[in-house]
Length: 555
Image (cartoon, rainbow, N blue to C red):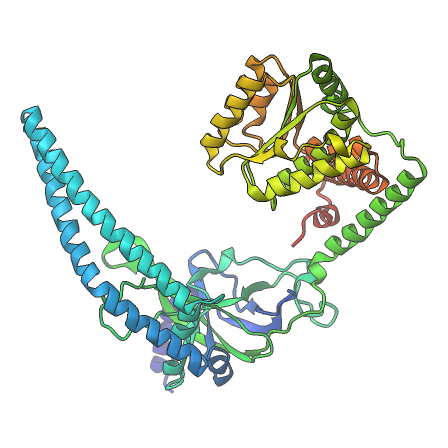
């Protein structure tokens, strides 16, 4: 090569160097591994760069569709036939309704435009009212059609889902079946800026790679847990023909013990020709990183603190149960509302008036109702001792049945089974405000001397408490509904706030199992509060203790 050609080659190389510097960094020394999670539905990708990435660089990940993945999402013949039958049924039922809905929507918009224009033109009131009536008539027709279509969608779901989204499976299967025809890849992530990808740092327990054998600390990493599968739609060109929603993509979880091939694409940001102020990602290069198989772990090491705390707190609770059996008079904080139970029942006895007890507005499956039923049993025993009357209206028939048995047992334990009156525990109605009105009527007619409002309440809380206050009764309320607590506090004589409702049963009965559990839980909460306080102190006044943060932050 002559001197002139060498000079020209050097000049060309110098011109190409700036272009090469602008190219996106390439991943080097890639490594794939399974992420340390419970179900094994993710793989981790680790890599270094041949140069430091900048905010203008971006990447995406793709996963190869393989036969095992297709087989995993295959439908049985029965499922496929059920889905096909349901679609045909829906097409037959919904086709006319969709056309009617489109026409009704057009008529509603026309009526609305006429009404708006009439208001702008300041027409007389009679004309405006006529236009408004016309609009509301069109709106009701459109609304009725919408409701019928919604009910058909629900019927379609009940015919096909049966505990799992079969339509989702079917659509995934259809796409994967089509993808087998070529070398298809599906996106795992969109174009992600490289500098926003986190680093593994010192958390070696988060990933299924051994930091002792592979010094990967400080590397860039990403995880793939789902792949986004495009929705192939239905056989009809326009999905509105069946009224089925059209998803832009379907997230499909990776499956353990299936090998996936992973590919990375790098991008560089180039100016948008239509808008100079914006940048668009442009594909720079693609790299096949290799294959990886998600593996499910027998134990998720990132949640070791959950196991440690569970064992520790269980031992604390068991210890306090043993101590409570030795000393049933173990000290627990005084709760004024429960101390006043005897006073309230004694006052009712002296005045010859009944005691009214409400178990809340929820069903028996809810914790506040169960707590109210437990307290009712203790209160019923004390009422039997004082030879007073007890009235328990109920909103739920199941709660009524259980309340009858609990009160009967309370009277039996007190040695007064003959004083129990089954008619005093009765069902009113399951309608919220009808029940409230009926209960308020009982308060005004019978004038109970003591009223217990235990359990969960909604908007009726103030109505009940205000009516009870007007009768002059001693009122003791207890609820964990934080929105209703202010109303009970200002209208009742005593209020059990939050967990005091659940502690009431142990407080009144002094039963060792309940008492020990209560004391153990209090100690466990105090320990957790201390750990959080220490973490806050370390964070404010000194270097943050990562081990302490990880202890109270389950991952």
